Image (cartoon, rainbow, N blue to C red):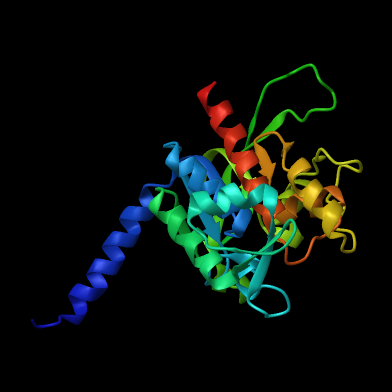
Length: 270
């Protein structure tokens, strides 16, 4: 077989743009491909929800790849084991209530399962802004009249090099901020729109110092609609609400993504 360089190029360009055109209008746009959004995207895809994940880095998976301090093992508590079983991630019992899993297997399996569910992942794409719509009056002075209605995207290298290149937009019924410690989409809401989040200050409070027990519990509790049309998952949920970080234990991250996926499915059915 003769290999034609131009046919290789044509195949990549045509297939990529076909894939990108399919996500210009979504039901759920997820920002950040960490473990919480990968679980969320997998469940959404399995339920037939039109979703896509936009990840600014080259490799999806977030901090799960590195385990704890580059020891590529992670800890998962018992409550989250049904999710590991569902995804097909192997684990071993280390102590009562503590289970360990290989971080490379865990991350790669999550990424693969998410893509195979039908939720597309676009890496090296940076979310630089949101688009919003006016909701109409609700009579509640504590609720914004605006709703997040989509994302503004650019290539990550363009943003990192501060090149003056205009971005493009996609529309989405809901957006999920899973950008980890920085809670980037939440910050856009307060910084660029001057709006208040559903936090005690109305701003992104920032994460507290590590406390695995409270951090794990609050990761799930904080995974809510933080602004009309915008949900938070994983560490972005704790960072936005001012809760502790939890370190290399990932059960709360996975349960956080599951919680948001189920709520979005319910709301989309309405």
